[in-house]
Length: 385
Image (cartoon, rainbow, N blue to C red; front, top):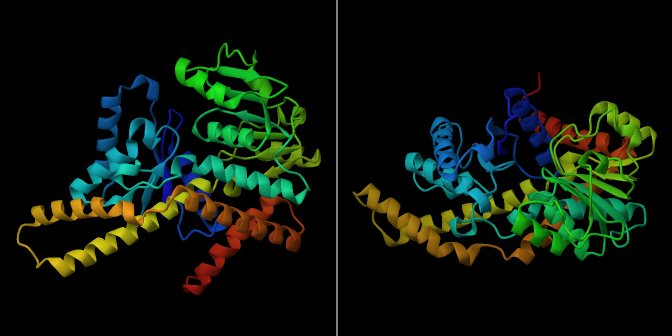
């Protein structure tokens, strides 16, 4: 199984259960051999120091270490657990290894120095861009020259904005928890990223004017990309949405009522179980690479060493050997991105084929694809009633 660990004050059992189910369909649609899982802690990150967060993460790992594992339940970053900022995945890996020995494949989204994959930090955002390109191509369009609005300029949103900008898309509005900024002529994304890094906010960015974050969802644009929490598009604001396309870069941003309203208006919605699958795809790449490296190191040990009596020394030697070999086997970022695009393109073609067969929209096509695949696998294993 595969799923992210979320740190947010609104985490609750119902949400975790729903997101775990969503991960199942997301993995199947992306043709990744994982079942769905999810976890989280209800907390407010800004109220915790780094040391408090580390202790919380390690205690959490102690409580779940028997439930997770390299071939049972592999963890990944989610909201509040970005490996480059607070090293959450590194802490989980370290704590888990105290119980089960060095197990680098138990988490993905790790720092590069601990066996993480190049391109993983940008994977979800880059996958969103590949998904957007696939959708636009169906309508004879490309990113170049279109206007984009991105709700939540966090890790995913910043990568989406950066890559849209690089591909000559015009990002005209952005928001995060500190506010929102707009510029009808297009925002200078590199300048905004630098401004945010230096000030921690979008407020008073000189390359645009402030706007109400809630207005962004109904502001006129070609493509709207929600990257925040679920349920941001609802029956109250759906009638006012002016975007032609909505790319669901976060999980379940569109309520069922809003989906019905938007569909009647002719808005094309690219569903979350496809649009934001880039993260789980590259997590799979990372997991596979680490498994291969681990097997190679084990073979080396079998060839070089007799079974030693000192298990502690053996474990230390194994860990050193793993880290010495890891760089020689890991993919370059260009290869990661190339494979990611291949998976995203293939998934979109499969969804479109399902839509044509059943004469349905993209959301129904994606879920039908996922359900059919799971049903087929279930029957093949003899689990039918």
